[in-house]
Image 1 (cartoon, chains in turn purple, blue):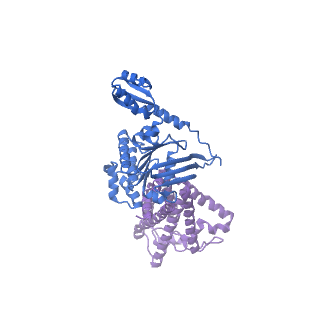
Image 2 (image 1 turned 135 degrees about the horizontal axis):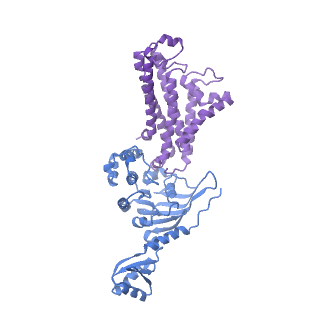
Image 3 (image 1 turned 180 degrees about the horizontal axis):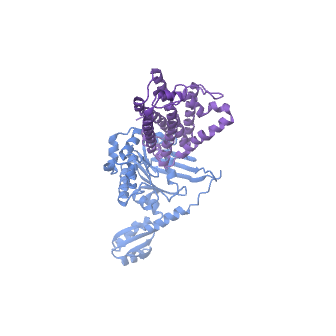
Amino acid sequence: MMPLLVEARRALHRRAVWVLVGLALIGTAIAAVAVFFDSADLDVATLRAQGEMSPAIMTDWWVPGSGDGLMAIAALFLVVGGLLGGAFVVGGEWRAGTVATALTWEGRRIRFHAARLGACAATAALIAVALQVVFLASFLPSVVAHGSAAGADGRWTLALLAAMARIALLTALAATAGAAVATVGRSTAAGLAVAGGWLAVGEPLLRGWRPGIARHLLIDNATVLLTWAPLQDAPSSPSPGVALTRLIAYGLAAAFLAGLWFRRVDVAAA
Amino acid sequence: MRATIEVEGLRKSYRRLRGAPRLALDGVDLVVPDGGVFGLLGPNGSGKTTTIRCLLGLARPTSGHLRVLGHDLPAGLPDVLARTGAIVEFPALFPTMTGRENLRLLGAISGVGQARVDEVLEQVGLASRSGDAVRRYSLGMRQRLGLAAALLKDPALLVLDEPANGLDPAGIREVRELVRRLGAEGRTVVVSSHLLAEVEQTCDTVAILSRGRCVATGPVSAVLAGGSDSLLVRVDDRDGALRALQRAGFVVEEAGDRVRVIVGAGQAGEINRILGTAGVWLTELRPEQERLEDWFLRLTADVPPLQEVLA
């Protein structure tokens, strides 16, 4: 069996992964029920006049080029979930000591590391796609019963599918980053503290100190990638292609640096 | 003599955030012969697990030379691991998977088939519980599953770190018999233990580690004989034995229903001959265990403590 498949199976046996998926499904179910009852007396014209959006209106799921819509909220949760999932999978391996067991079977550490991070990324992307499908499908009853599918033509559908693919990619990159940091920190907590600290404190500080540097930061590039349009209110914004390339490069760099460290580190059972 | 493992001048120090690095191995030299059971004996913290971790590529030696199954480490590690099964410290497996799933997943890394998984589960006596999640296993069952995982590759070299940990007396006996059988099949089995009796009953060859150094090595009987300065003799006529041995110039004393002879174990044959000539028949003749343990503790305590390495 391919090392990637073995690692994917190991990742899927982490309880934390299924807890995250379960939370996402519970959140989706609650949102779907709430939207269904809220949309019972929906007046699309009034809603539009007030500039508000509703999941019962299909074209509000994703507004191409603007970053508005239901999927933008889903993206935030999925990216955070990907980060948590990557950190949980690798941190859990360190805590349980299964890294040592695996290394008595596969001594080529870079190969093992690449397979593990690749499995985290692929698994996160697949879960992200599946959850997005479930998420959107859960609002279909509201659309059919109380809302509207007007304007949801082929072009819009393609834009939605492209957005879903980009969200899956962002989730995969977040999982890779979480896994890479947890590899170096040898724990889930380290992965979450470093990644969360960087996104919540490091990047805002840098943006405030040197606004020109913002185009290199993760949040700005992720936002451009998600909307597939340059930022409107930023002094300088990367193009979508540059943001995509830059984020992939950041993910690969994090994986590479973690691999260099992992190649040299002493591994204890737990 | 061909060697499965050759270790020369192995040193390992661990960096610490504060203070000088901690030296765990201080120039260990070892030769593990092909086939049979080799014991790494030493008290806790003597360097047994660190030595094993260096042999399996889990820890990078600070200096020294390692050669395993004809391959120099670390360059030959993939070739070594392909023919080596191991348990390090304790068997770390996925608690939510069944025993069988754990083995299948490990086997998938090296292309080991389902038939071999069934075979090793049978071999360690876990076939009937192989469908249960590992989190429901007792410590002893986890240890057996670890052994099954180590055997999965049908390895030429087995490295087992304290394999009897957590097992009940019946389990310890089973593991001991399994290890002896594997050694007798021609595999090389390296077993670490802090229990003198365990090594004595299981191993053919032993190395005694203390404070990161190898303080004695060789066949178990020869190494342990070096520590015994008395033999216990049980005979049908104790007074007759005392008289015969005293006449022959041995220092003897009563020890309950036995006779203690202060002498090296190498002279057991001579004692047997003297008593036979005097018409006194032996029912037991063995090194005195209590003194052997005293000797082991003395041997491992005599090594000066490892100095902290100055950066």
